[in-house]
Length: 130
Image (tube, rainbow, N blue to C red; front, side, top):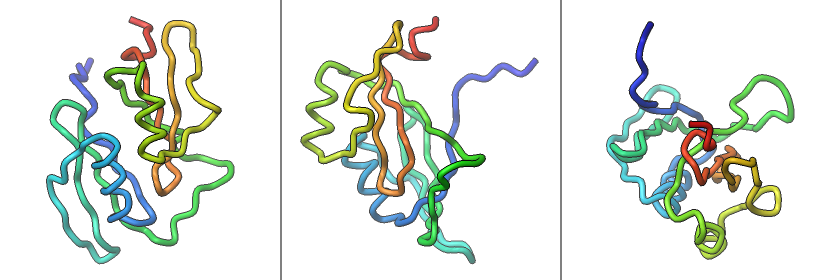
């Protein structure tokens, strides 16, 4: 058995790297740790040691599929859930499903980043299952 201590990073493609970095800095306060360029285009690693890291590769032609295999969303456990909606509205973030979704043991707010990736912001870690 392998013991997982934490999620280290999420690697994903974005339409516009600069816009994506600005979103994650503004909304979550993430810091850029490293940037670079491959034959396919620019990339950046951003995040925090507490929350984990994201590695984003720019692909301007990226289109979100209507169906098929893809990551549906990724979830982040957040602080101060009570004031979250107000902060998101003030930042002009796209909020899905009309606001908080009650899952019984926890509530979640779903948003999208500039490339259209769906992000779940959870009130309880692990959805309150533990």
